Image (cartoon, rainbow, N blue to C red; front, side):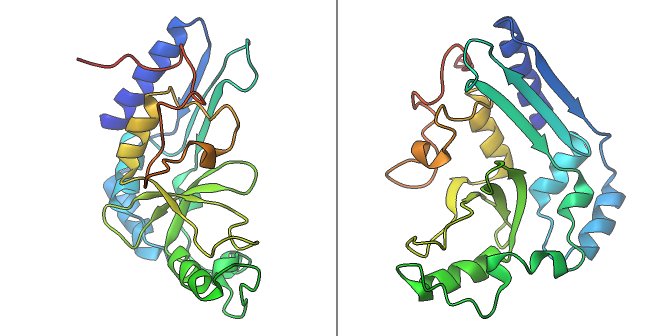
Length: 217
């Protein structure tokens, strides 16, 4: 019960601060239902995602908001399984990574950008930031790492995209749970990327007390 333990621990800590938590989830999916969907999906369903739906359930909502500061909150909405299963590509063709003709002329390195776009065809999004940015799983690898997909990466950028947030879905939620699933104060995740490599600086003052879990000893 790795995921559920994380969410319950965070919920209990936030409630101890006098803040209401909304935590709802769907019915856990059977192994057979997951395998049938995996067989149809154009983009692979990684094992970590299958395990999440089998344990947590078919979709999840987890949120809280501290009245003292409108920017101090958590708001997770994990999609239903059907929304992650892509059985055909027409709806994906509008995304820049699926264009075979776009020349990436506004990036500093169009050749690198083309390679980035090809890699992104294996990314499976599971979290929408609301501004077009997303958290995605790179299904080309196993376990599938969690990546930050910046929506305007091809508009004047280097040609790269996909800062690695964590090595797996469970590791990402385990690390994010340390700050009770807060969003950065600035609401801009790149502000808390580690400067020396992959990952997130969870010790950043963008994540605030008392909504941090005590260290277990």
